[in-house]
Amino acid sequence: MIHTLIVPGVGGSEHDHWQSWLQRGLMQCSRVQQQNWNHPVLSSWVAQFVKSVQQIEDDIEIVAHSFGCLTSLAALDQHPELCRKIKKLVLVAPANPARFSENGFARDSQTDYSAYFHQLKLLVPTIMLISENDPWLSFEDAHAFAKSWKIQPVNLGAVGHVNVASGFGPFPEIKQYLNSEMPMQHISNTDEGKYFFKFAF
Image: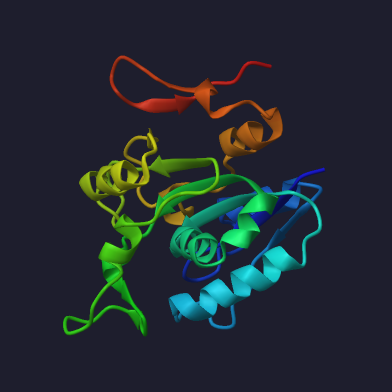
Protein backbone atom coordinates (compact mmCIF):
# COMPACT_ATOMS: atom_id res chain seq x y z
CA MET A 1 0.00 0.00 0.00
CA ILE A 2 1.23 3.48 -0.80
CA HIS A 3 1.75 5.98 2.02
CA THR A 4 0.70 9.61 1.58
CA LEU A 5 3.08 12.14 3.12
CA ILE A 6 1.59 15.59 3.75
CA VAL A 7 4.11 18.45 3.56
CA PRO A 8 2.56 21.72 4.82
CA GLY A 9 3.91 25.20 4.32
CA VAL A 10 4.36 28.07 6.75
CA GLY A 11 1.87 27.81 9.61
CA GLY A 12 1.55 24.05 9.38
CA SER A 13 -1.90 23.69 7.74
CA GLU A 14 -4.45 24.16 10.51
CA HIS A 15 -7.35 21.79 11.27
CA ASP A 16 -9.66 23.25 8.59
CA HIS A 17 -6.99 23.26 5.86
CA TRP A 18 -7.49 20.82 2.98
CA GLN A 19 -4.23 19.03 3.85
CA SER A 20 -5.53 18.26 7.34
CA TRP A 21 -8.89 17.24 5.86
CA LEU A 22 -7.08 14.93 3.44
CA GLN A 23 -4.94 13.39 6.18
CA ARG A 24 -8.04 12.54 8.23
CA GLY A 25 -9.57 10.77 5.25
CA LEU A 26 -6.67 8.52 4.24
CA MET A 27 -5.71 5.23 5.87
CA GLN A 28 -1.95 5.39 5.29
CA CYS A 29 -1.02 9.01 5.82
CA SER A 30 1.29 11.16 7.94
CA ARG A 31 2.75 14.63 7.80
CA VAL A 32 6.18 16.17 8.07
CA GLN A 33 6.52 17.95 11.40
CA GLN A 34 8.65 21.09 11.55
CA GLN A 35 10.31 22.48 14.66
CA ASN A 36 9.09 26.00 13.92
CA TRP A 37 6.20 26.36 11.49
CA ASN A 38 6.60 30.14 11.32
CA HIS A 39 10.33 30.22 10.55
CA PRO A 40 10.87 28.70 7.08
CA VAL A 41 14.59 27.92 7.04
CA LEU A 42 14.95 25.60 4.07
CA SER A 43 17.85 23.53 5.41
CA SER A 44 16.01 22.78 8.66
CA TRP A 45 12.77 21.96 6.89
CA VAL A 46 14.58 19.68 4.44
CA ALA A 47 16.17 17.80 7.36
CA GLN A 48 12.75 17.15 8.89
CA PHE A 49 11.40 16.04 5.51
CA VAL A 50 14.26 13.58 5.07
CA LYS A 51 13.70 12.18 8.55
CA SER A 52 10.01 11.64 7.80
CA VAL A 53 10.66 9.86 4.50
CA GLN A 54 13.29 7.61 6.03
CA GLN A 55 10.83 6.44 8.69
CA ILE A 56 8.29 5.23 6.10
CA GLU A 57 8.79 1.70 4.77
CA ASP A 58 6.14 1.79 2.03
CA ASP A 59 6.25 3.59 -1.30
CA ILE A 60 5.29 7.23 -0.91
CA GLU A 61 3.19 9.86 -2.65
CA ILE A 62 3.93 13.40 -1.49
CA VAL A 63 1.23 16.07 -1.25
CA ALA A 64 2.88 19.44 -0.61
CA HIS A 65 1.56 22.97 -0.25
CA SER A 66 3.25 26.38 -0.48
CA PHE A 67 6.71 26.36 1.17
CA GLY A 68 6.20 22.63 1.64
CA CYS A 69 6.54 22.34 -2.14
CA LEU A 70 9.93 24.03 -2.01
CA THR A 71 10.93 21.82 0.91
CA SER A 72 9.99 18.68 -1.02
CA LEU A 73 11.76 19.74 -4.20
CA ALA A 74 14.95 20.74 -2.39
CA ALA A 75 15.00 17.57 -0.30
CA LEU A 76 14.68 15.30 -3.33
CA ASP A 77 17.34 17.31 -5.15
CA GLN A 78 19.78 17.14 -2.24
CA HIS A 79 18.96 13.53 -1.32
CA PRO A 80 18.30 11.76 -4.65
CA GLU A 81 18.51 8.37 -2.94
CA LEU A 82 15.03 9.09 -1.55
CA CYS A 83 13.52 9.24 -5.02
CA ARG A 84 13.30 5.47 -5.36
CA LYS A 85 10.55 5.51 -2.71
CA ILE A 86 8.61 8.44 -4.19
CA LYS A 87 5.98 7.39 -6.72
CA LYS A 88 4.22 10.73 -7.08
CA LEU A 89 4.85 14.35 -6.10
CA VAL A 90 1.86 16.71 -5.97
CA LEU A 91 2.76 20.40 -5.68
CA VAL A 92 -0.20 22.60 -4.73
CA ALA A 93 0.22 26.38 -4.93
CA PRO A 94 4.01 26.48 -4.49
CA ALA A 95 5.39 29.55 -2.77
CA ASN A 96 7.72 31.81 -4.74
CA PRO A 97 11.37 30.95 -3.96
CA ALA A 98 12.17 34.66 -4.37
CA ARG A 99 10.49 35.28 -1.02
CA PHE A 100 12.93 33.08 0.90
CA SER A 101 16.63 32.96 1.70
CA GLU A 102 18.84 30.68 3.79
CA ASN A 103 17.73 32.46 6.98
CA GLY A 104 14.00 32.26 6.30
CA PHE A 105 11.98 35.04 4.71
CA ALA A 106 14.19 36.97 2.30
CA ARG A 107 15.26 40.51 3.02
CA ASP A 108 16.32 43.01 0.35
CA SER A 109 20.02 42.45 0.97
CA GLN A 110 19.86 38.67 0.89
CA THR A 111 20.18 36.27 -2.02
CA ASP A 112 16.92 34.46 -2.56
CA TYR A 113 16.31 30.93 -3.87
CA SER A 114 14.97 31.74 -7.35
CA ALA A 115 18.05 30.63 -9.27
CA TYR A 116 18.41 27.45 -7.24
CA PHE A 117 14.86 26.30 -7.86
CA HIS A 118 14.87 27.21 -11.54
CA GLN A 119 17.81 24.87 -12.17
CA LEU A 120 16.32 21.85 -10.38
CA LYS A 121 15.73 18.65 -12.35
CA LEU A 122 12.66 16.73 -11.24
CA LEU A 123 13.49 13.08 -10.64
CA VAL A 124 10.00 11.79 -9.78
CA PRO A 125 6.58 12.01 -11.52
CA THR A 126 5.26 15.44 -10.60
CA ILE A 127 2.02 17.38 -10.95
CA MET A 128 1.79 21.09 -10.14
CA LEU A 129 -1.53 22.78 -9.32
CA ILE A 130 -1.52 26.56 -9.64
CA SER A 131 -3.89 29.50 -9.19
CA GLU A 132 -4.45 32.52 -11.39
CA ASN A 133 -4.41 34.93 -8.42
CA ASP A 134 -2.12 33.31 -5.87
CA PRO A 135 -0.58 36.03 -3.66
CA TRP A 136 2.42 33.78 -2.96
CA LEU A 137 3.32 33.04 -6.60
CA SER A 138 2.11 34.95 -9.63
CA PHE A 139 0.52 33.06 -12.50
CA GLU A 140 3.38 34.10 -14.78
CA ASP A 141 6.06 32.98 -12.32
CA ALA A 142 4.25 29.69 -11.77
CA HIS A 143 4.38 28.99 -15.50
CA ALA A 144 8.06 29.99 -15.59
CA PHE A 145 8.95 27.48 -12.88
CA ALA A 146 6.82 24.80 -14.52
CA LYS A 147 8.70 25.40 -17.78
CA SER A 148 12.04 25.11 -15.98
CA TRP A 149 10.88 21.84 -14.43
CA LYS A 150 9.46 20.57 -17.75
CA ILE A 151 5.97 19.93 -16.43
CA GLN A 152 2.53 21.16 -17.53
CA PRO A 153 0.89 23.05 -14.67
CA VAL A 154 -2.76 22.49 -13.81
CA ASN A 155 -4.67 25.78 -13.66
CA LEU A 156 -7.31 25.62 -10.93
CA GLY A 157 -8.60 29.08 -11.80
CA ALA A 158 -8.77 32.15 -9.56
CA VAL A 159 -8.60 30.28 -6.25
CA GLY A 160 -6.06 32.29 -4.27
CA HIS A 161 -3.42 30.35 -2.38
CA VAL A 162 -5.54 27.16 -2.24
CA ASN A 163 -5.89 27.44 1.53
CA VAL A 164 -8.59 27.99 4.14
CA ALA A 165 -8.81 31.69 3.29
CA SER A 166 -9.72 30.85 -0.31
CA GLY A 167 -12.21 28.10 0.55
CA PHE A 168 -10.10 24.93 0.85
CA GLY A 169 -11.49 23.28 3.20
CA PRO A 170 -12.45 19.95 1.83
CA PHE A 171 -10.73 19.26 -1.51
CA PRO A 172 -12.42 16.07 -2.78
CA GLU A 173 -10.88 16.30 -6.24
CA ILE A 174 -7.36 15.78 -4.97
CA LYS A 175 -8.46 12.84 -2.83
CA GLN A 176 -10.16 11.28 -5.85
CA TYR A 177 -7.02 11.82 -7.89
CA LEU A 178 -4.83 10.14 -5.28
CA ASN A 179 -7.25 7.23 -4.90
CA SER A 180 -7.84 6.75 -8.61
CA GLU A 181 -4.33 5.55 -9.45
CA MET A 182 -4.90 7.13 -12.84
CA PRO A 183 -1.88 8.38 -14.78
CA MET A 184 -1.33 12.09 -15.02
CA GLN A 185 -2.61 12.10 -18.59
CA HIS A 186 -6.10 11.99 -17.06
CA ILE A 187 -5.64 15.62 -16.11
CA SER A 188 -6.55 17.33 -19.35
CA ASN A 189 -7.20 20.82 -20.63
CA THR A 190 -10.36 22.54 -21.80
CA ASP A 191 -10.82 24.87 -24.74
CA GLU A 192 -10.43 27.83 -22.38
CA GLY A 193 -6.89 26.72 -21.55
CA LYS A 194 -7.69 25.90 -17.95
CA TYR A 195 -6.97 22.47 -16.57
CA PHE A 196 -9.31 20.41 -14.47
CA PHE A 197 -9.23 16.99 -12.90
CA LYS A 198 -10.65 14.31 -15.19
CA PHE A 199 -11.30 10.88 -13.76
CA ALA A 200 -12.24 7.60 -15.41
CA PHE A 201 -13.82 5.41 -12.76
